[in-house]
Amino acid sequence: MKPAAFTYHRAHDVADAVGLLSDLAAAGEDPKLIAGGQSLMPMMNFRLARPSALVDLGPLRRLPSMTALDAEAGTLTLGALVTHHAVETATLPDGFAVLARAMRWVGHLPIRSRGTVAGSLVHGDATAEWCLLALLLDAVVVTEGPSGRREIPADELFHGFYATAVEPDEVVVEVRFTRPAPHAALSEFARRHGDFAIVDAAVALDLDRDMTAEQVRGGRVVLGGVAPAPVRVPEAEAVLAAGGAPGPELFAAVADAAAAAIDPPDDPQVTAAYRRRLTRTLVADACAQAAGGPR
Image (cartoon, rainbow, N blue to C red; front, side):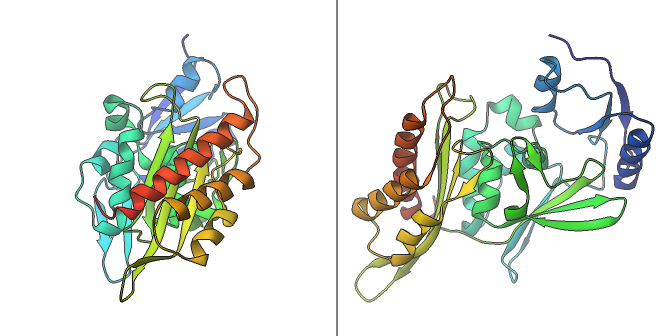
């Protein structure tokens, strides 16, 4: 398939991109931003998306591809043009190392080399690794639009199937992760490596060491592929908050609570019951990986 006809525009800076989006929309166009294009172009090729205009962010120099760590605030900021592969190969502090480890699940190397963190978040796929990581580490998406800059917390970002709080005339300029998680992991299952996950699970454990042994004092559980958007699972997090020694017994209880709490869909690919079984397996696996500490 080939995409429907569209006009192409190159933005020179953030203000130019915002202006192009606004002017094109006012002229009756349906503009879309493109950076890496790893989600948008396949959808256009299959005519699942038919924008009449593309605004290319690739040439922008004001959207840094560097990472910035604020050790005092405990935050990590990624510029909007950071690619998956740049994160995969970065040396990140323990609190954010899960970001690099999770990148092995993102497509294949050519996709990771072109696709961007911000693009994945704005695309809003319910199984996208960055969407789960945003909820796991309390990300804040910073946008620029006609009304200026605003910040969107991750728990307000995802509205449903491929729908986010980023407005059509806004440009994401950075993504800030505000909750370090040194004991965190992401696990998923797809039919083939690089395919979209059927279910994925991200877990962060709050671990303390008392006089005798390490103890779980709380944590966070995020699931993808079980609802129209990625979701946290309070029922599973309550099991972690109750505490206990990290190990198979506790992790099985967390996994059982997560599987019981969800209402996944049946679809032509798999049944709801299969998604529940996958959830149980993946949550337990992510818990075990997270308990292993920074890797």
